[in-house]
Length: 67
Image (cartoon, rainbow, N blue to C red; front, side, top):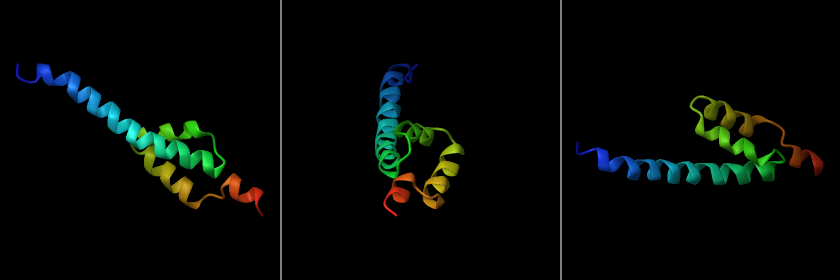
């Protein structure tokens, strides 16, 4: 019974934390030359780890333009 009132607050906190994670990754993807919406992948467990390694070790399209 005590937890019923906390459900809305918990949902808002999770939405806030999701935005805190997605917005920077959206900007990083855009600056790297990838579509910004790829930043949403950071919310999917295990996919987020693969995505981080992809960003860290791939040749960025934006970097290729300057060579």
